[in-house]
Length: 70
Image (tube, rainbow, N blue to C red; front, side, top):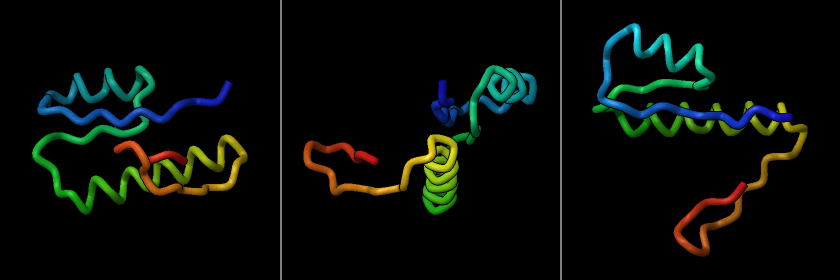
């Protein structure tokens, strides 16, 4: 089964919590408040790496109902 990427966005800065999230399966972890450009770059990287894992081409469609589909 393919791994679904999970990015943790939280105000929790405790290093033990970060380690717990990452060892628990999170793909990335960002602490609020974060820079929007950094968030978009890291999300893009997760989506691209997931597309490679799933072996499917990355094709984005425009949102039709307020959500993005890949």
